[in-house]
Image 1 (cartoon, rainbow, N blue to C red):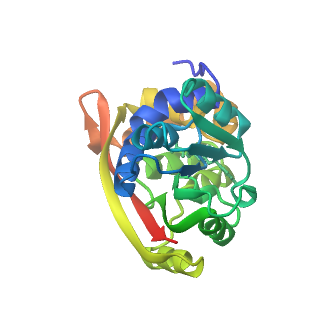
Image 2 (cartoon, rainbow, N blue to C red; image 1 turned 30 degrees about the horizontal axis):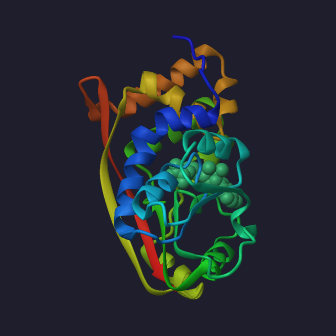
Length: 263
Ligand SMILES: C[S@@+](CC[C@H](N)C(=O)[O-])C[C@H]1O[C@@H](n2cnc3c(N)ncnc32)[C@H](O)[C@@H]1O
């Protein structure tokens, strides 16, 4: 097997990871918010815009929808896909969005929280940006899935413990009590945390692992391995996940926590 990645990180993310992972969680998150026509929505750490586009489809032409992300390449892909949709795209760090207070009815953020450099400051900023009575939902992985556990272990063996730690930290998960405390101290009321579970269905490790890692911040470290080491890493993941093989697919459970609060 050769390990040539076709396309950039954002392209692989949108073509592979959005249909297999993020698009499915986007539906679950947006359902939780019960968006209404004409509401104004901000999607923070919007990436290639899967949740942003879905929000726009719910609030319709009279609702304003903006997506914020720190990564210009992810935003460029988001803009390209959303061509013709009336969505605003803002390149900014979550802690420095700089928009006027009380600009939005709803703020959502799917799988961005893990990357926020100052989580309490980000949550306070969300509250400032919400109008009175507005609501916010942040979805956060509920720890590791069998797949992410297997991949981190293989990265530790075949890349390095440091890179494995970087990958692992993307699933570091606060407890429900910690999440409730964080939202409450940021000033949110009626705070609740909802666990959502899905069975995730992806191609076998041989095909999926190079695509997944190619869309991740650690892509360079994986691509720098020689082909034998890459193959050993993939074989290690295959072996760990043998119990989850269904025909020519890997099917495994995964879960997120959606933290919800009101201004
Ligand atoms: C796993 S992706 C999730 C993207 C999108 N929400 C989705 O569900 O597909 C995480 C996103 O967080 C963005 N991000 C990371 N740090 C950020 C920061 N400090 N401020 C804003 N966005 C950030 C990344 O650029 C990336 O697009």
